[in-house]
Length: 65
Image 1 (cartoon, rainbow, N blue to C red):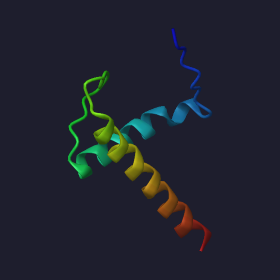
Image 2 (spheres, rainbow, N blue to C red):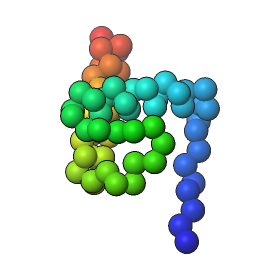
Image 3 (cartoon, rainbow, N blue to C red):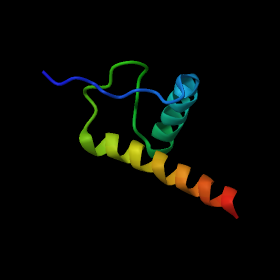
Image 4 (cartoon, rainbow, N blue to C red):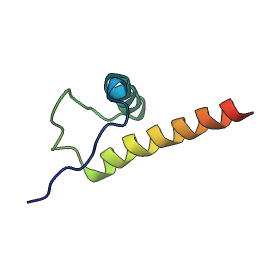
């Protein structure tokens, strides 16, 4: 059985990241629900995660200018 080794570096950020994930999912048209989303396709999960990364990179680039 696989174990989850993910650990929050900043536990206080968990709520903000979840809100960011839900907002991003809504923007790309993916219906996420609070809690378990095991029925989500890999494609939809990738769309949400990929767009989150794109936004974070854009924000970082704006901050270093």
